[in-house]
Image (tube, rainbow, N blue to C red; front, side, top):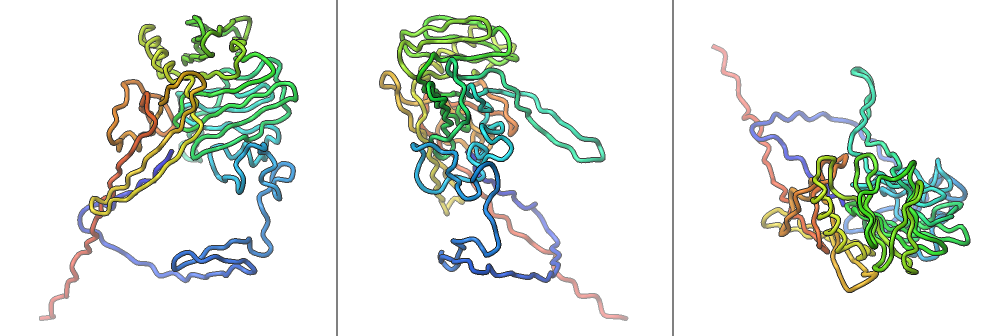
Length: 372
């Protein structure tokens, strides 16, 4: 959910220096091209080049790790979830997937979930430095007994992806995405299960909802109406009352959030917990008169129970700073790109980003005075 922003030039007089350089252009050999306006683009690879390399036959079969349900045609490349498709270092599952505000890492037992709120900075004052929000699994969302040999991709939309697991007896599909503080899950062959590194710290367990805290981060799991959750040892499980769906939400709380406010947020999120996001789409328009780019981000939801619509959205700073026609709630999430503000009950949001035009003025030329 990123929208590129331009950087204006500094105001005032600017001296411009032009440096001439020799440019060498190398034509693509034996590559076919298609025209586009006054230009063209290559439709085949130049002779002597190779495709991407990685696990299995990924160099020649980029659809090696998709299911039969995945969209037909070319697969996306260079996306936040690309390591699910283009497996290189983990040939079975994936490297961490940074969705924001949450991060995820698939494993044999399901989907690892993380929320990192503090940056780790490495390096020295005179050497290279790095800034990371490191991934640490806080719990794993899965199905009792699941032991899948790999994780495949069942589908994707503009900024969501649906990883899929199967061990022949049990299946799990989850939908995750940028700006979505929910994990939406579909299961078969066993009970819904949340597993932890130790006994979970449960702060609420009533009816179809269970709230728990990991590393100071609050979550709420929502089972279907009529279902319950069982806390035992290092796991929380539910039969889902014989149905196949549930969701888990990350709440925008901190260690200083009053218990009543935490409960109120869980109730608000609960209104949309079973409106699973099943599609996302972004569209743009440009208003030349005002030099404004209008971007509309649309979410399609499917009600697994009831007839509700709308969801909970988390916006990056460049989005909420240019938000049009909506007001976020007071709480925010932490992300590597800054605070993410939250809309509840929305099915779409629009940003209006104005791009200003600056004139570059060079100092007037001066003729040296005539010698006297």
